[in-house]
Length: 85
Image (cartoon, rainbow, N blue to C red; front, side, top):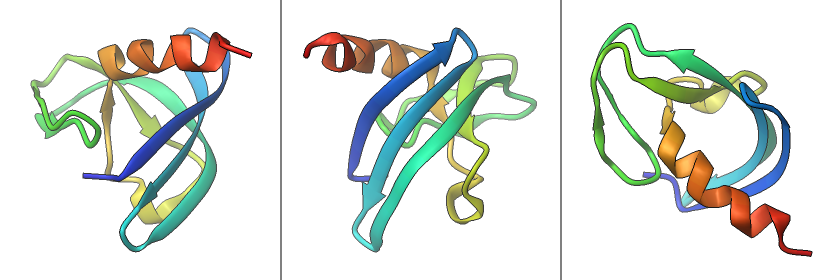
């Protein structure tokens, strides 16, 4: 599980900018794209088991954590944090 997630921006319904970090370091600002899972994965934020066909987000600008997935509901829960000035 990654340590911290911060929503930096919502570009559209299928593309968000997140800052993530874990115990090994800070991954910085990344673009995460909406996808439909082709196989089951765990959400790296809430550790929920996501089944194939579920909508999730994956990083598209960092090779180090390209295998991570965040469920769409976790991204939705981050939006109020971003909208507060």
